[in-house]
Length: 319
Image (cartoon, rainbow, N blue to C red; front, side, top):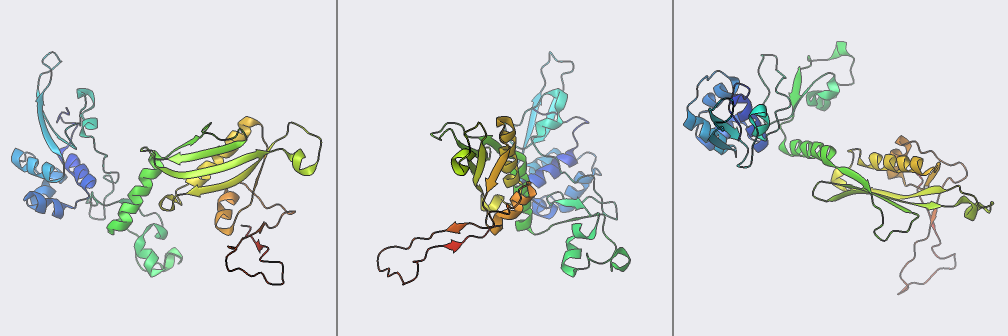
């Protein structure tokens, strides 16, 4: 059970609850029946002693609970404890009352606008260091101008009000923070096959890299040796998880495994869409192999080949 001590600010707890529920002050006030002005005073710390019933209505409307309990009398001080929590399972010891909130703190609480006010807790605010950080400069296309020609001064921070964009950004941050990469061993794979996967905590597969080893002497006719090479078969990342660095991390994991195995060379054939990823990871074109060929077989039913060489091949795109 979490304590309400001087280390736990009720305004901070309410802002964190609102962020978790994705509610503005106006929306929480409507849900709870508490005037928005009262909520604003509590969050700003100007309401020194709000009524318990008011706090309870606000916390419950934001999806939390108000927990009341008594510390063990054997402890250093037996005192009553009250806290706003995210759910019935939120617990913490007296040494860390803030952790008992089971809430992620509002990350931009330290930011202030030009009038010294906090930015809305349920939105995502960030500092504006240059025009490209400010959406207002993007639509006006003046972010390319030199500072002397900027038509407006840059704000200290900004935020995104579009809920769809906001949810997508938060989803991306959660994926970056929780995705885990591992090499799959066994599982019926040949000893020369390499498979790496990227998974979310629930086991959802969001990325995969497959490669295989080959012996150069089988291709070039050299004397057999211990030298080995790796051929990158493919890198796949779920559509909604792209541009989050997962593909680069998978390719980097392959490189680390090559170092541990004493393998110095990796080969890949890519289409245009995947070339940038491999270039960023250090891959380069081979001058002797500028393209790849592909044979697309058509169904036999109703097919009449022309006098030319069938539809023998199409030049693959080398990224």
